[in-house]
Image 1 (cartoon, rainbow, N blue to C red):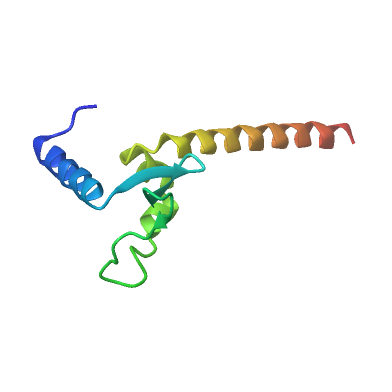
Image 2 (image 1 turned 45 degrees about the vertical axis):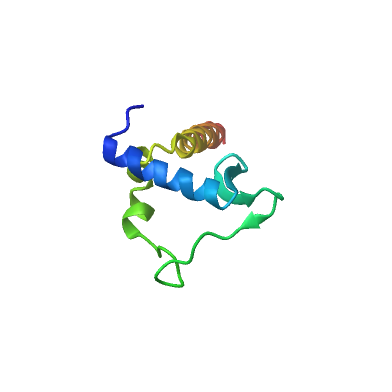
Length: 101
């Protein structure tokens, strides 16, 4: 994946900050980001402007597939596809069962 020069500068700043404070980035359960110190302790990220964090997004709630595609979080799309296939299989087997009665 190609990264613009401005984005690469931001990524370099983040990398320098993590190296300066002896932190590393891991993913819990394969997708949940966690900052860890060298002693393997979880570290809370820097506080945000608001105590509530980023808050709730109605656009992300109703158009989660579009948001996850935009940020390239394809594990969500795999989960969504699996849930749709399971739901379709359940509904088709239910329809066949109801036709037999």
